[in-house]
Amino acid sequence: MNVFGSSQSGETKKNISNLEEIVKSYSNKLDKIEHLLEENHKSIQIQEEQVEAIQLTCIQITEHMTRGEVSLQSIKETILEMQCVLGVNNKYMIKEMSIVDTETWATQHWIFKHSNSMQDNKSRKTNKWLERNYHQLAIEFGDVEYEELGKILNSLKFRCIYVKGEQKKQVLMEYIPHVALINIEDLGCPRLDQICDDETLPCCIFHMEFNPKQRTFYKVFAIRKWFINNS
Image (cartoon, rainbow, N blue to C red; front, top):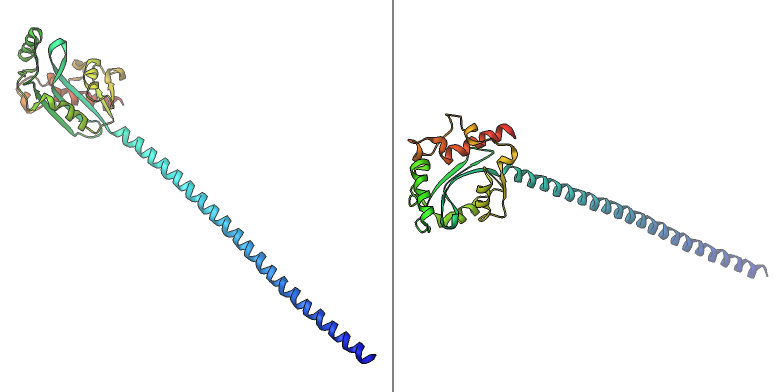
C-alpha cells in the first residue's frame, strides 16, 4: 500500500510540475504576443502620425505654390500703348505699339505696315490726315506686317495688360480675350497731356525729330511712371 501510494503521489507531482511548465511557457508566449501587439500598435500610431505629417506638408507645399502662383500673376503685368489707323467700316487697326513691364524697364516697340489692308474713301482721308498731323507714319510704312499682330500679342506672357482707353481695350480683346485687359483710366489715370510732362522719358529712334510726347514709346513710359507712383 505504502509503496503504491508513494508511487502515485510522485507521478501526480510530476504531472502537476509538467502542467505548470506548460502554463508558464504559454504565459511567456502570451506576454510576447502582447508585447508584439503593443509594439505593432505603437508602430501603427507612428505611421499614422507620419502620414498625417506628410499630408500637412503636402497641404503647406500646395499653399506655398498657390501663393507663389498668385505672386507670379501679380508681377506679370505690362503697360501697352498704341496708335491706330482706320480701315474699312470704321474698323480701328494698330499702327504703332509699345509695351513696358511694370516691374522692370523691359520694353518693346513695333510699327506695323498695312500692305494688304483694305481702305475706303473715308479711311484713306483719315489716315492721310493722321500721317501729316499726328504720327507721321504712312500706312504702308513699318517693320512688321499687320498680319503678324495676333501672333505677337499671343506671344506676350503677361497675365494682365493695362491700356489707356476703352476703345484700345476693345481692339486688343479681339486678339487676346484670355488676358485680363484693364483700362487704366478706371484706376484714376488722368489724361495723357497731364502725365506726359517728363522730358527725361525715352522715345523711339524713328520719332526722335518729332514731338516724342505724341509717340507710343514715350507715352507708355509716362503711363508706367504714373502707375508706379499710384499703385
